[in-house]
Image (cartoon, each protein chain N blue to C red):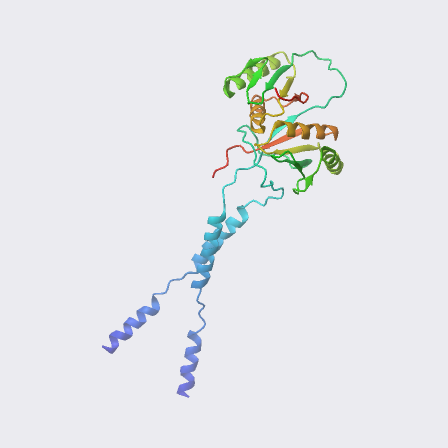
Length: 145
Length: 148
């Protein structure tokens, strides 16, 4: 009888779950997520309206701004070579203010050399987006200039 | 002496740390990482290295986007990275996707052009999109340079 009593008391103490290994696993998972996660820059938009030739002439008379991008990455606005991106942005801003003041829509014609680097072309789009010009016309294909 | 030993044994029994709250906290952290991690539904092809544009804005509307990859070697690819052999295939692809765009939504071509490529290929993509009747081009870029 005494033996039975001791057995009963042992049974009451037993049901204790050892959760230390569960913590280990959880921490391993946490470390895995922390180590594998990388800070990836988020993809962003440079939206441009590039109207296709509709064959209809515009009724509004506006002076188009001619921008040229050479194969070496040099940008010229209205035949004036831009020393840097800051000068380019200030020229674009001046044109935008002029069109806003005269209540006209800016018209930008971009002539880019085929061999110019895509990053440089995006730099130009970046400058246009900064001043708020979102409608441009890409001129025809040119080679070796 | 015997009594003393018993009291020490009793102390050992009492010194147990309750780690259940720690597990709760760890699981909360794991859940946070799992929830906060972004699911990329429209993944950028790893072969395309996007250019950097500081004035690029986060995407406002995902609807109506026709993804077109432009690789540095001058080849083109669909959103699922399937190659497009020539310009006719690009025009056909944009036309097909344009037809699937819901009425009332403006179709836009999301041009993911590699920064090492030349403008010629982007121009070709713009022309093909124009031929397909899509005039809104979104140039994909990173707002800041990628680290590492």
